[in-house]
Image 1 (cartoon, helix red, strand yellow):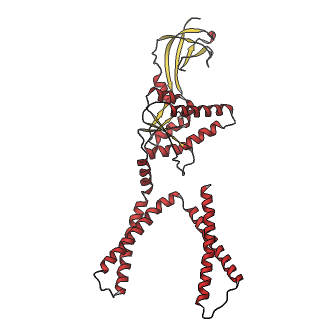
Image 2 (cartoon, rainbow, N blue to C red; image 1 turned 180 degrees about the vertical axis):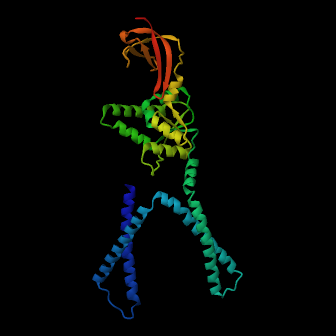
Length: 351
């Protein structure tokens, strides 16, 4: 909104300036005329209107030209113009210094010397500027990175915030450094919280509550919300990957696909599902324990139960004991990307 107001004021100022210039040129023309001619009011108004129109056209041309100057183009051309202007000024002042030792009346020599040095220094400036422009984005990124003091930065994905377990991990003190929440992740979380679907809306609101609790809690991890948003990337996951490379940060996520893409691109990922699986108690073949059969398995005789940590227990011969606690013996353990499954055979019925 502020930028629109500035643009309107700029157009109005250009129109006013156009009328001023038109009036000035008209008066100058009549003052230089050999015979005094009385200026008709209609002629003066016409010239002012014409000047205002030309001023508005000039403002429109500038606005259209600036519309095509993207941030990327500006970052590439800025070092060229800066180096060119600096080198031409350096050549001009060097020529002025040499003129002190040359005949002061030889204006042609002074002109040739100044032109030659400005040309030589200008070419050198353009060459250096073109070289600098190729690394300008890296330079801007480096400067931004220096202005932000992150200790061991970690970017948080939306899936981690909604999951909620990140708050418990932070509270226990197993994470250190700075947890960075980009503004576009907050926007995605807000869109989920405003969803028409009841389940998605509940998850989004829960995620916002968890993030707020993490910010207000007292722990060693610092929660930082940043406005960095890679404008040349549309997808949220792509923005997260780009930002992770720029900040040299790790990514905390539960998203299986994002985890794989990040590993391919060489970005270190901390997956909470992997952490949870690694913390589950290990079991060995022939180990015995009790489990409650809560549902039927895929095979005709199988029953399924769960441990307290959510590990699925497949009990061979347990289908007939739904709702009962049974003693089982471990036969094998299967580790998958979704979690761990323990296959057992029926031992005895407890209750």
